[in-house]
Image (tube, rainbow, N blue to C red; front, side):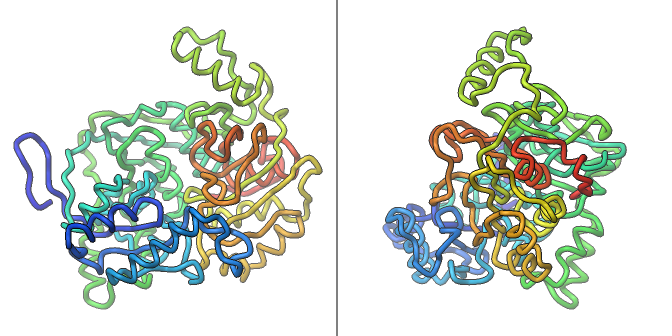
Length: 459
């Protein structure tokens, strides 16, 4: 913190600034018009991810708008001397995947990006949050940002997690419990036995969706798993600096008697594989449940929202979740495209075939390095044998800014983070699930309990 004011605002120094092609063009143009240069180029890393194609990359980008955005990022990075992992670089990928992968994200950092799911990086005990385009320019120019301190919220998941339940199921269950406004005005610390037991990649999945619970940021305390993950990453400290850093990082946890403005405790045993049924992440139930009936809701505002969601989703109240068919399956996004996610999906896909009613099932790795590792392990062969398409890295169908999208009325089992109306294509119907659940839906042709496939916990 550079300084604080009496009104509660503070000027924060930003340690790491991640940049992509969608929210940066106007920011760079603002620098250009003002005759400014980036304050600290070494803190900035860029990659195209939202608009890049996941097939036929040798032919370039066919959509003119997408091509312009990516080419503009290339030119801006070249002009201002910013490190960029371009579309043909094996290190290219989704910005929230490559940040931790390359060691750009380190414990205790302040991390920003012009993308709401920057909260992902909080899995490393970092303060990470998304910013708007004008703030992107401000950070480029000054390396600082004015913020007001958020309230503190603890979400503690304790007990023993059930078989087949993953990090994605945990965070969906949390959002289902507290709602999409439950964390508004707060920074959420995810804690408890279950969170501590998660792998670092699982923690990233949980923190990624903190924004969907209304929080400004989400974070997990640093422990041995955090430090082991960061060790030997390309941008991690070395030698004596590493020892000094680790000593400081080990202090990045809340005190046992720490006060939180809000505390939510969840019994892990109550969580089963989750499936969203509506047009908000909070509209979620267990796979063994039914589509809720709006007539049973006493709150008129919620009842109206539920009715509208069911109309858009083409669902009837009290329909068993396992009877809902799917047209397409998408395994990818900054939430669930890391190597552990692909391994979990591959366990379900191995030896099976996608159902005849499934028009498309696609696997989109989060980065070129994730893709390379998956191919080294033979996962791509498992997916292709089952009928899945094996794609190049990018944001893909998470938000349909490239050619990967749903047509009106198509229903998708998706491992992404948002199921808003039109998120994956105009009129498309999105159901959020874990990678294992998505793979199971592709094989069954409808949502089904992944625990019946004997899938291990992907946490």
